[in-house]
Image 1 (cartoon, rainbow, N blue to C red):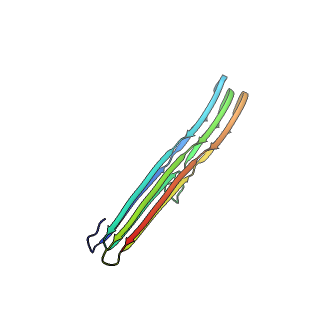
Image 2 (cartoon, rainbow, N blue to C red):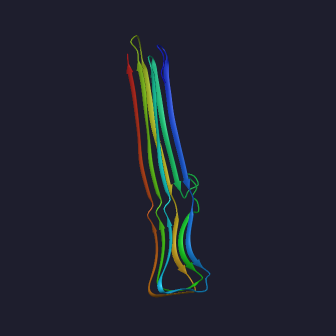
Image 3 (tube, one colour):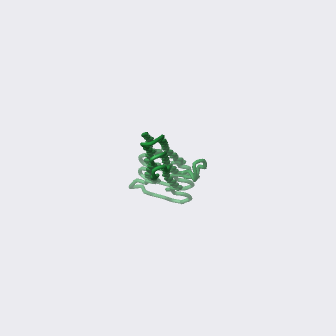
Length: 193
């Protein structure tokens, strides 16, 4: 924003990004009378690779011959497994065998949570005032907020009538969730009289 000879220049800029991912990932054998892989392997894998990439930025300049003021604000809110900032969802990643008869050479169950949030948030604000004849006033402010949350129940289990493996049984649940945030704000106020 620009002001005239005796004017006031005011400027403001703002940006907000909110992203939400809710999911359930199941891989299972349930209530099956006979599952047989006697010459091979039985693999049950449930994997979640949900990803949020959020980039938010603003810029603001306020300039005048008498008074210049500027403010810039950027907000990023990213949720995996939350319906909002305070409410967890019922998100699950599950691999299981339940109430079944299973025979195989190797039995492998894997529940893998690999959700990722990457947030980059920035803002810049400049207030400028210049007066040859009197007083000049300038003000500037900048702020950023980045809120990122991940919540998931990750389970792998066997709760079955009969499991027979001629070699190995592997049951694994792992959570490799990752949150990466870069946030920056710059504010400059310049006044000449």
